[in-house]
Image (cartoon, rainbow, N blue to C red; front, side, top):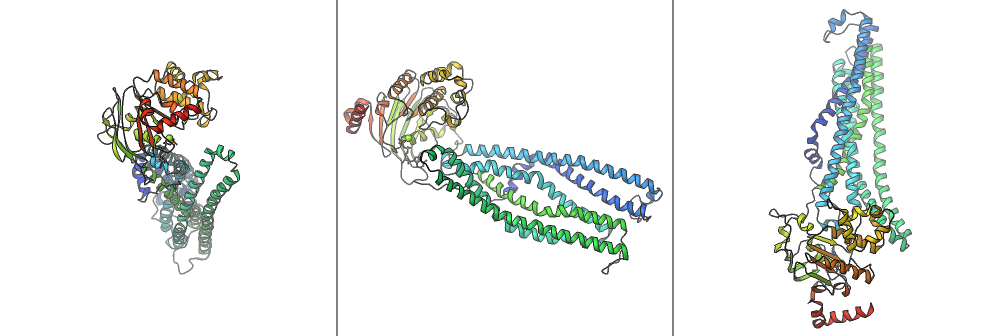
Length: 611
Ligand SMILES: Nc1ncnc2c1ncn2[C@@H]1O[C@H](COP(=O)(O)OP(=O)(O)OP(=O)(O)O)[C@@H](O)[C@H]1O
Ligand SMILES: [Mg+2]
């Protein structure tokens, strides 16, 4: 069966607004520092050119200031050299102010960006953890990783530089526009000519490039899924000699990324040269028209005079214009990319788990544990057929249940329902006569220790894996558990003992050793319900029966469920159920079943003769 992976739907509401309301506004202080730093920085950057123009007119061309200037009458009484020194001091101060504001602004925006990214990463991870199992069964790990890593990082540029760039652009266009307008409104018309053209160009650019970015982000997700899948399955790829096949698949995913990325790049690299040409034309026009104006009076039907100082100020300001305006495209571009990433992040953040604590759920720790399945039926959300039908049994403290049945008969599913990885469709499961749906998920899962069919070990040391998630575990407890799981002796032979690093997923251990470590981990939990799912299948019969013995000595204060294909693993259980195609086809003690179930009796006969 091949269930196509489900794509995480991008969040369709305005996620950029969500980004601000959920995260941005908690960092108003950083925004304030960023805005203040950017504004002061821009303001101080404008001063030198302004005073240079004034100095040229006042000192070198000996012109007087128009009476509209503040301090114009005071400056009249200064000598030329005093004015020069005064302006030098002002320009020096403006450089200092510029440096301090640059630091303040950068600090503000970068702190803003880093803190929001950190919160998004941890929140996205929390959201993932809260999701129910069926979400993971049809989502691709690589895609999820790509959201938490790439998409969140993608926001960095936007958060740390786009705001300041946008603000700088506004200050340049409005601030400089205003100064130039006051200096000479006629020449301003010529100097400002690129602005509307670039605005139109940027609009067209954005409309064109946005879908390309969306396609690119999605192909990155596809590529990381492929890589993640292949690296996890590297052993299969080696043993199955499918390297050329996998190489082809990776190459296909990479080509798709290459193509979508190239589409976006080729659009982007056309845009910036166009902007540069237009801003360049604006500069040349101002320079030529302004130069002629100074040389031989107002051209083109203009009437106002233009002093050499104002001309210099214009030329420098128009030059300063070029890059912020050219960055307009970059800002819109970064915004679009951030928007695509952000809507994927919020798509994940807004996924709601299907299994949650009910509002009345209680915390509970069973004292006199008993377990009751009442006519439980269940089907996986992605399947039409029921995999468990009308399952009922009851267990008391100290009892052991053996679950046998062919592969695919629903044995593991039984445990998944008990741990509420899924909810039953019909019937109910009760622990100590409380429906598990009325217990908090945390306390329910704390009361179940589960050694699964494919025990997962984390990279790290043996000790970390054994005491995994438990607080204050003593050395004594660890040794007790590993002795019961018959792995203590092996660990003692290792040079680093319990501090041996076992590699990713425990690759340095054999299958049976991994299982026994997982068994020790479950034993440490000391939960009132203990479930072993085929967890001894890699062990030889002697070690298995050894472990069974040691487990049974400590099983009197809990319920134990043993799932196995081998009847030898379960025949000592107080109760045994045989599953076939999701139904209980026989149940009772070993002796009952030998008498009443011909199937059980013949299996027992076959298995005891074959072993
Ligand atoms: N997550 C899932 N989504 C859809 N179907 C599933 C899922 N997990 C298991 N199934 C199906 O449910 C049925 C029962 O699976 P289950 O894992 O409970 O079998 P099992 O008895 O434990 O088998 P085995 O002895 O091989 O471990 C199988 O047909 C399987 O294909
Ligand atoms: Mg199973």
